[in-house]
Amino acid sequence: MTDEREVDLVVIGLGPGAESLVTGAAAAGLEVVALDKHLVGGECPYYGCIPSKMMIRAADVLAEAGRVAGLAGDVVVTPSWAPVARRISEEATDGWDDQVAVDRLVEAGITFHHGTGRLDGPGRVSIELPDGSPGPTYVARRGVVLNTGTRPARLPIEGLADTPYWTNREVVQVSELPGSLVVIGGGPIGCELAQVFARFGVRVTLLEVGPRILGPSEPEAAALLQDTFVGEGIRVLSQVQIGSVSYADGTFTVDLGTESVSADKLLVAAGRTPNLDDIGLETIGLDPSARTVPVDERMRAGDRLWAIGDITGKGAFTHVAMYQQAIALRDLTGVEGPAATYHALPHVTFTDPEVGGVGLTEHQAREAGLRVRTATTPLEQSSRGWLHGPGSRGLIKLVEDADRGVLVGATAVGPYGGEILGFLAVAVHAAVPVETLRAMIFAYPTFHRTIETALGELS
Image (cartoon, rainbow, N blue to C red):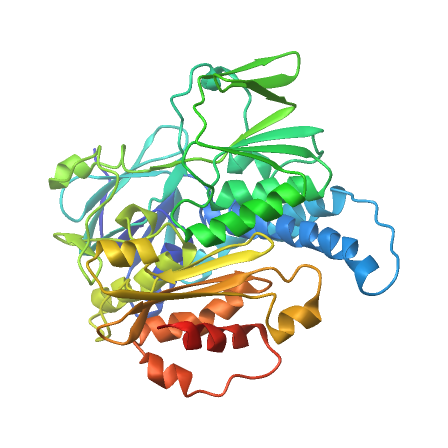
């Protein structure tokens, strides 16, 4: 006999956005059921943002130590991965155990299940428990929220599946460093981790099938970062064709046709697969093979159905999921508020220098038919860049809609590039007139003062 229960809200998948949403819904008086087949909190705290930034922080400290000679004397540093592995295991992930997060949900009055949730028609969710047995079926009066996220893609490279390669999930659990590493994928994850391992003394080769690393970013930013990588000893190969991957006697070999690249370990940091293929989308008239769930400006995806996070296709970032959950929660609870807009979506790659961007790139703006003006100014030539000295390389690039006289995109590369980006994100989001920005007072001596120089060059 089916165990069928009626509640207000069911949430499938508990990444950071949904974790916040269920807590808010419970506080608003809704009877909430939440479930996840893996770890509460999702990819970000256990395999993504949090552990990777601990790795990056450690690698950046090593790089800063190497700059002491030009600024403050002499220093000798012996890199050790042990403190990094300890921090990730103990401070970030609690040994990849989500009990603390589960306890928070229960204390907030939420019914939680570890298990797989599947849609079974509008407002209906059936649960399969971890041991494969059936759990209860919930009928949601208010509706269902999907936040199922993504997983590392399985690339169709000959031989790859038969090797013990790393994805982001394995690499953050590393306790000992290899002597050499090949990274497939020159996007944000690949770039960040390639630099981390190189700064700890690992010989790193970075492979990118596209024309350049950080392909969606401005080409000037990608070129500057690649030049930095090469200066740090990272071999960067772009526009490669990967024929096959093999593994024998503890060595990976990647066949590129014109040459082969070998290393002790292989990290695949290219592509993500949405977790939409086993959640019953077909029962509500949606395509289970789709890569996204279409949503409107209130995160509605259908009858009594909302979706947030990576699966909406609006940007695979934790901050997008958090932004969307607030909108969905307001809609679920009948609270008025602004609808979703993405014209000023910010993103940061936490390399050194950091690469931050917001809104449209120059190429995207021209593709959209805008009459575009741009300006690009080196960060290291600013007063703060000169004072900062080693490690100050960067740039500010502005993209203006010349007809409206407002910025529609911007890039900030350099130390604290992600923080400098905040200024530019406000300008793009609020469509602040360029003339108003030019009339501001910019604090001296700051990195963001370079924005004033770039504004003066928009013509």
